[in-house]
Image (cartoon, rainbow, N blue to C red; front, top):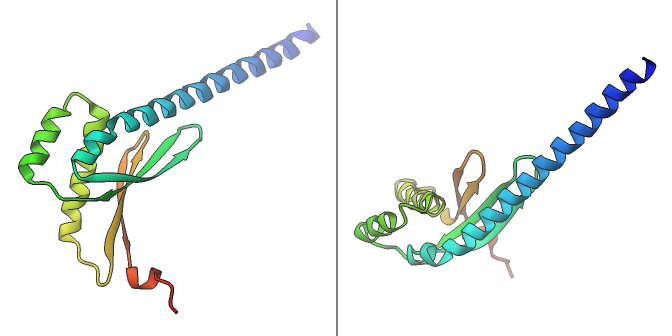
Length: 144
């Protein structure tokens, strides 16, 4: 009987370790899949007028990916609709394009003195989001 409590604790520890290993493996698989999806989507993203300039990975219990884009050219509303229609079945790519297009729309409505929109950051994870990054270019330049 004295071993039964120890057996229960050992069993709980073993099961907890198995669960943690499964969670870590699932998170890694999820992140690997997201990176592959992003890489596969780059030609369509570039066709939509955006370029991936930075990729950050948050490796945690719930992994996240932060993809930063720069708008390299504007496209017409008809082109946007055509691209969104073409990519409708690819939910991952469609999410990215909708986020980028909405960020550009917001940028047109927001005027911040001496600040220019430089990048759009999309958080791809459990709760996706878009972030607009503005910078004052004159403050970033080195002074002689």
